[in-house]
Amino acid sequence: MREEKNRPIGVFDSGLGGLTAVKEIGLRLPREEIVYFGDTGRVPYGTRSAQTVCRYALQDMRFLLKEADCKAVVVACGTVSANAMPLLRQSFSVPVIGVIEPAVDAAVAATKNGRIGVIATPSSIASGAYEKTLHEKNSDLQVFCAACALLVPLVENGFTDPEDPIPTLTVQRYLRPLIEADIDTLILGCTHYPLLRPIIARQLPGVTLIDTGVAAAGALGELLSSEDLHRTDTDTCKGRMRFFVSDEPTGFAQAAARFLGTEDGAFPAVERIRIEEY
Ligand code: DGL
Image (cartoon, rainbow, N blue to C red):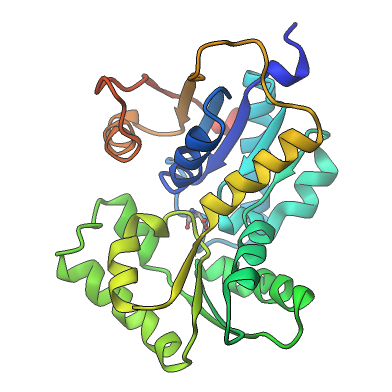
């Protein structure tokens, strides 16, 4: 049996979005082994009820723990982080890192005028989790939220080209009230949104964008240090990554290869699993 610190890190999301966290974990913690699950058969999560999101999240965790024996899990999904963190922490003994707390810490550190915007899925915004966590840090902050139901389907379907008018106009429509509110910091509260970052940044000059995946990767590094869980059984500088999905893997594999890039152009096989069985 592998020593606890040499086991993989689990990362999951409803689809492609969590790869924004995987990319950052790979850069910051290159020796770690990562096992990723994208629930492509049931994406999107962000327009579903909290009960359904919780049920899916329990299955995603059980898969990662049963099949990969992960030492820690990053919930690289704003929607699950907003709706299911207490349940996941109660239900499993491994450390579970969500994206909200780390993103909120980064936003609070970045803002100068105390006016923070949050864009996220309808389910994340309805939960009130971002607003509540921001106000727990500083009750004087002014928080402006926008639920952006159309952005995840755009990303999942590859509509991310900064020159494409479809994502550009959609993002423009969602951001208008936040621009009018004079925010100086915007939390990209869904892990899919960094794939639209060039489009968002162009419409918000001078506004600091907080990427939840990046913030969560930072929190993971701190956790591994404080719990003495950094991997030690490898002297190669690069850990392995394994990818699992719950629907046809081809589209995911192509998008993941494009997004994560690999030095030799090769990308590990993406395996399909039956998540309903967990
Ligand atoms: N990427 C996820 C999030 O951060 C889920 C998006 C979705 O499936 O709707 O919220």
